[in-house]
Length: 292
Image (cartoon, rainbow, N blue to C red; front, side):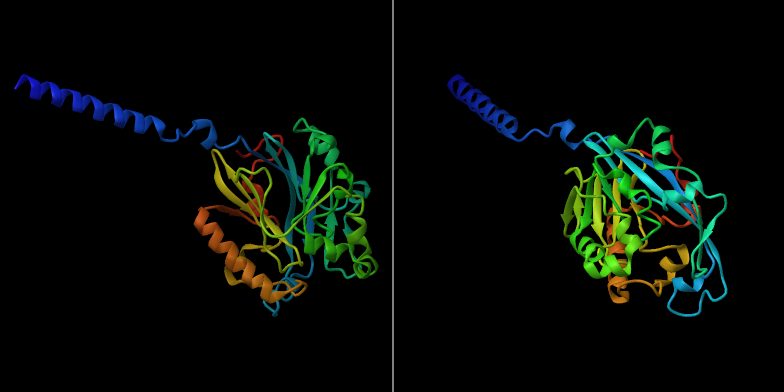
């Protein structure tokens, strides 16, 4: 009996040792590996837009005779591996004007109060601190001070780059080309791009407004997931009713991007901020305060 008990005890000990060894051999998840990086979102003022002809923002007469005030932010995303500037506001030449400027068509009246260099100072940064610049697309209200960042790396969809730099575009859309021509450190991307390789800052391809239009996904520690829409949507009504501006590059492509955007936002449970919607601009803390 004693011999049987001894054998049983030895068997239990051996089994326990094997189980302990098995558990210890399992991969250990390092808490540092799963910890979200400390990403901060600074919202800065890229100018003011008064849309005098809102009918441009729908393909029917829904907005006939209406006007609307648009916000026009640009953003700094601070990441432990570097800083990304998202969009570049209105042209800085507006800062020196004594009154707002109205374009030849009369559709837009625009103004800008402050330069990017000045605003960067408010968050303790300078031009040289921006590692990457990415534009949602290459329209005038998003490329304003882009050339200032000629030493930064421009993250651009290859199709957008080809479109804006083609000989035809350089002739037809000279101002658009001139706004980015100093950006010579270029990383062309095709589709979605994880900027820092950890899922916290991801450029999402959403073409249609322009050939290579893109939006930005951020996963912040406290706030959680959010999306900056570029010009996929300009205002709440267009998102709700899937309205497409008459000047979009491709309507069908835009509608497909809207579907993909909404599905992605739902899957990530992401808060959505429309960049031109004043109410959304007002929700975000302004530099030097930030969202994290």
